[in-house]
Amino acid sequence: MLKWALIFFIISIVAGFFGFSGVSAAAAGIARVLFFIFLALVVVFLVIAVATGAMVF
Image (cartoon, rainbow, N blue to C red; front, side, top):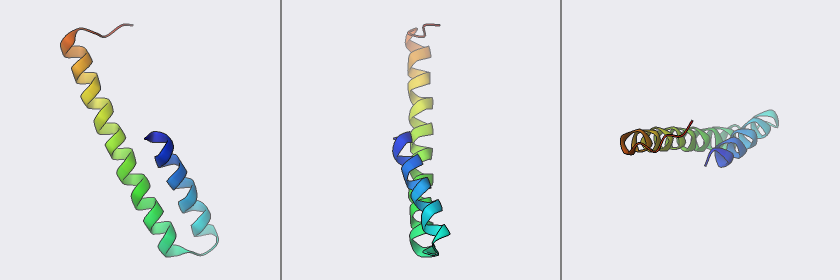
């Protein structure tokens, strides 16, 4: 999911560079949503790992 967020971020930068502001804003919005979903999943899985004692360092 983080990979897709980075892809949409790069699409947003390239579209903004070429003047496609609508496409750039849409791609940036998608990238932001995917990044926050990724962060939420990381936190959920970290809490589950700590709760079950599956943390291995």
